[in-house]
Each structure stands twice: as structure tokens, then as C-alpha cells.
Figure 1 (cartoon, one colour):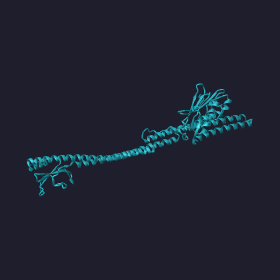
Figure 2 (figure 1 turned 180 degrees about the vertical axis):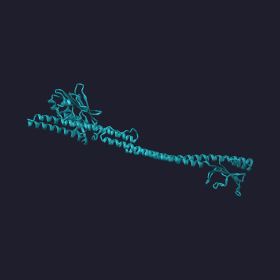
Figure 3 (figure 1 turned 180 degrees about the horizontal axis):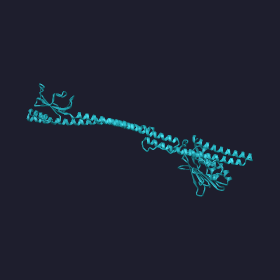
Figure 4 (figure 1 turned 120 degrees about the horizontal axis):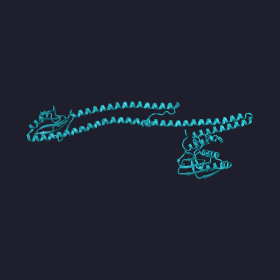
Length: 449
């Protein structure tokens, strides 16, 4: 995002420089084009004068041609008409409105107009021979070009000053605006850190700073959810820790006349608390460490877990059905084993005697699918966020366990980029489905923060 801000600033600076470069270039092109047009127009007029004077001299003689030139010069006709008639033998000036013969123009007849160097205003003309003896220079003074050039320079200079001043003002206002918007971002972050979790940046512009604000708002939304999630976990941990202690204290007080039994109750309570703390620490540690990724045969793990819980199922007269097809995923085998063991153990706890439990593994185009279905109570007694810490709500507190099983399942699935879905069965009970990404998708993502 900093790079975007830098590119955005450079683009604006380059735009200003481009404008400053375009103006002199455009002015120079305009002047060159205008000068060329003036020169061509003057050349055409000079050629026309030479042709007319040649015809006039041939018909009426030199004196008549001189009278016509003097009359045109006296009346100011011709738009800058310049002429000079001299005797080449003695250099005497016979007629004309020029003070001297142009220094860069040779005193010989010319076939086309020539620009006289060093003359101001610019002078262009031709030399012709009259009556076989006299030399006549006839030309045009391009008087408007110098004025046009000066005016163009003034206009370009004025626009340059305006653009520079506008650029400086715009830069100043942009910096002030950016400082205010950055200050708003800082104030929002400060307010959030002080506990005002609903505060957000009010900036809907689509420039780079606006996109920064949008990303900061999204990050604050995520942090608020994370904080709420951790607060809920803390509340549930406190509740879970408080319950066994309170029950043990009541039981010990009721058995105050039997110290041995009271000691056993205290030890059982301590064991439950230690088991709960170990589960919480395991979940926390799993979230921050890297996985030991390998290719895991999901169907083989399911078969091993089924064998492990076979005796428990038999003792509860629960039929453990298996439908295991080859399926492979990338992950940490020990964690996958624990995920599956927790789900099977949880299903056995809530399945009534004489019911069935079905364990399925299969692979398809979307990846690998693990399903565990029981005939228990279903979703009716789940809390709003099943598996966070509690198992299946207050109605099942008489079932032994710390309530961390499903929480661990969700964390392991999260680390493996897997999705967990809970659904009621049509014929009663619960189905937990864990969808793993295809093996070709690569390794699981980085630790959650």
C-alpha cells in the first residue's frame, strides 16, 4: 500500500511536469508553423510583384514601374512592402523606401525569394534587373512575427506561472488533506486500543489512502471478532473451572465426616481441572506451531480409530459401521488421529445403547470427506457455537468429559484448511462431516493468529 501511495504521488508530479513540458513545446511548434506560413505568404507576394513589375517594365518602361512602386509605398499598400532601385555602376539609389541595400542579398538577379539575414523585422525578397541595367530589390517585411513571438512567450510564461502556482497550492492542500486522513486513521487505532471496538474510519474515497482506510476497517472488524471470540473462550473456561470446584466443595462439605472419601473427591476434581487445562494448552499450542506435514491415508487412520473404540462400542451395545474407501490428505497424522478419535468418542458418549454409529471415509473431486453419524440428541442441545469449549450444552452435563473435544476438532480442522459441518439426521441423531482439501492443493496454511 505504501508503494501505491508513492506511485500515486509520482503520477501527479509527472503529470505536472508533462504540462510544463508540453506548453513550451506547443508554443515553439505554433511559432514555427506560423513563421512558415508567413514566409510562404511573403514569398508568393514577392513572386507576384516580380512578375507584375516585369510585365509592366516590358510594356511601359522603367519609369512607370518606379512610379507604381512609389505610389504603393506612399499609400502603405502591400502589408510591409519594401523596395530599392539602384544603379549598379555607381551604387546610387534611384528610388525606394529602404535606407540601404540588404547586406546579405547579392546585387545580382535571383530566381527565388531570399531571406535577408540580420534584418529586423525579418525581410524576404528578390533581385531583378530592370531595363537591362538597373537592379531592383522588392520584398516584404514580416512585421507581425516578432510581436506574435513576444505575445506567445508572455502567454506561455503566464500559464507556466499559473500551473506552478496551482501545483504548489494543490500539493499543499493534498498534503494537508492526507495529514488529516492519516490523523483520522491514527485516532481510530488509538480509540480501538482504548476499548472502543465499534469505532471505524469514515473515509469512502477510492484513492490509495481510502483503500488503506478500508483495509484498516476490515482488520479492526477481524480483531473485534477475535477479541470477542477469546473473551467468550475465557468466560467458558472460567465457567468450566468453576463448576467442578463448586461441585467438589459441596461434596467435600457433605462428607466432612469421611476424610478419606473427601480426599478422593478432591483428587478427582484436581484431575478434571488438570485435564481441562492440558486441553486448553494443547489447543493454544497447536494454533501457533507449524504442522509436521506428511501424506496421511485417511481411510487407514479411520480403521485404526474404529479398532481402538471397538470395545467401548461393544460395551454400550453400539454397532460401529464402517465404510472406508481410499482417501489421502496432506497434514499431521497425529492431529488427524486425535480429531477422528474425539469425534468417535463424542458420538459414543451421546449414542443410546443398542443404536448404531457409522464411520465413513471417501474421496471425490472436491477432496476427502470424513463423516461420523450417531443416533444421539442431534443439534437440539448444541450451544450457539458448537465445539468451542462446550460439547453439547447444559442438557448433557451429566456426561463425563471436559467439553474440549469438539473445540479441539475445530482447531485441528482449521489448521488443515478443512471445513466441519454439523447436521441433524432425518431419522434422528447427528452427522459430523469434515471436508478436507484435495491432496493436490498442497500443504495446510500457516498457523492462525
